[in-house]
Length: 601
Image (cartoon, rainbow, N blue to C red):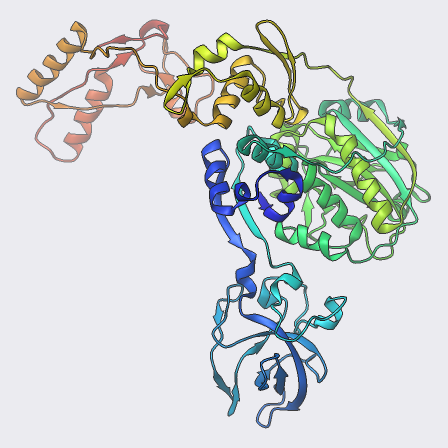
């Protein structure tokens, strides 16, 4: 998960120093979100300034090169040899000065001579600044910026290269870490701040989705499936702020409709998908109806072309979304190319659904395809946030694409409210012990406990013995017991803040008589010239042996019931290797006659 600190600052109200990259990375790593890298985007454009091409002449010795005189606001014009086809007189361009380094292409700018003409600097493309826009030419600031600043102005902030990005490793039990809201709550809890999320979008009213019984059963296995119909869209490039947020998160911008679905996924953790409604109509021979949407397992040998343009052959392990029984998406993984949003799209169906993690994992594995969506569904997406995320996307589509809402269709499994978790003061203090404040040990106060849990999104109701805690849906997977809440308090307060409360005085331990006897026996056997061996306790199947419930290998799927067999095998291997003999012993646990507890021999 790539986390933009600029975006994070908009979601968390905290002292500015708490969001400095290095200290924040250390605190997140200690709290369980390992920071694998910190990227300073400003380094991509260090030493790159706004320049103006005042003259452009053909290179005397090369047809594809140009000799440019560029004004960078430093008095004397620079002579730069450029190979871009779109360079021309009067253009404002990013210029890398001599001595600067472009990490995106691994290049340090030095004075050079190209085909007999001196060159001092480099006119840059967006790709050379780490902002690949798919073009081969140099960046034209007149087109990219609403107004061009004075010559010599650093280019980085103008193109959004003034941020730091943390790369976090997200563990399987923390799906909330794959959303900016989840990371914002974590940072707020660690730093004593509060979260400031965008206001909830207006709720779109839903009517029942008239799906077939088999489709309803498949939907209920995941939890929820909804379609929101929108028309009147104008598909165009996204505004700069949206494109920059996606790029910093490692997502390639496509167009405003697709970009909005990706933005909401990054913000909330809920993947969304937009289908071109008219292109779906081509599958059904007319205007598609919500009842034509289905959910089923793939058929062996069925072909499916995903958004990446590759045709894949499906199997019955793949879960697919269908329209008129034609597969239009690999559920929870990737949509189909034939129904994708294009510049000609004017109406869409916005899918917001929850699929079972196991089903998504099998689907992705069956076709060898990974995506941002499946990485979230595999860890678990709470269906309580699904419709709110769809409402957020609808509001953005109305704002940025001029969309009009036609309606929403929904089918879901009957909700099962989660009861609150009890959290007792005595249990917390007995398990964690006191914290050290100004050199004195004292119990963690109630205010600190409640502030920590509320920053995570928990709702607490105080009682005589403690609290009743309602866990936010995003944390329902890993906060299921009282001890889980206690662990969260310890993790976020910091284990190093709690005092040690070991027994006093400490009494050293010792070996039991059986352990002492075993050690003397080992020493005696070794002194007699025998060599101790240690063999695996897992062996092949045989009558009377205890089987494992889930063995890794078939040849090692049972517990051993003797030691002599492996000793004989060792002796046999020695003899086959032309060694004169074998003298060895082993002391270990065996499991004779189905005794799963085992006994020493």
